[in-house]
Image 1 (cartoon, one colour):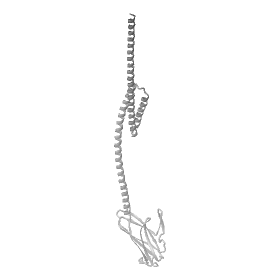
Image 2 (cartoon, helix red, strand yellow; image 1 turned 120 degrees about the vertical axis):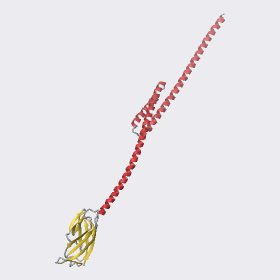
Image 3 (cartoon, rainbow, N blue to C red; image 1 turned 30 degrees about the vertical axis):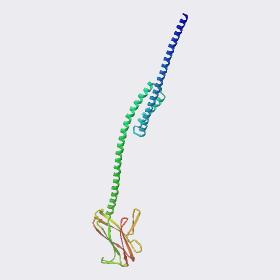
Image 4 (cartoon, helix red, strand yellow; image 1 turned 90 degrees about the horizontal axis):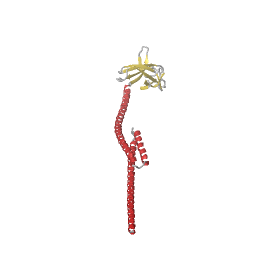
Length: 294
């Protein structure tokens, strides 16, 4: 009887121990499962965090490229890029829980949409800038062509002005000089002897010129004898840096028609030899000739 009671107690103890063992095994299994689930959650959370960081880094790269183009939106792009960099810094040090990660994901989506909007504006600006550059290039080409054309016109006008100036100058031709003996009767007899001459007669022709300016023309006549002396008035006049000693002046009323000019230069004791006669229009020599007395 006592043996039976003892066996019953032993069985009861074994049963209790078996129950406790099963319970312990169940508890250990649950802890292990929960640990694995937590480990899986942590791993998944870290992976999602890395993905968000990569996405933010991609945003930063996009902003860096847009900023490098130096558009009028550069300041706004830099401000948004700085926000992305700040969020990346916060995310790297943030807790890895789902709530915190969800907050950063939401902020990333907002930033991503902002970036898309800004990139559209940048694209529009680039198109406008390209059109403006094209228009400026076209305008520059037109201006350069106009400048070249104007330079050609200026050159042509200068040449034309020179041609007109040259063409408007009067031509003095047929310059001749003869010596005469003046008789008491007033009759003049031509001579080539220096001892008999008492006046020189100088004549020349001003040719017709339709484009020359009409009006009074003053010519300076210079007669130089064989001894290199200027005869006549021996007056001196300056034209700029040039001075001229002349024998006499003659004023001609010019009306664009051919004019014959004849003047006389009285004198005495004319030297033998070669004489030189020069006609000046102001300081410019327009005709010259020579003659001899024996």
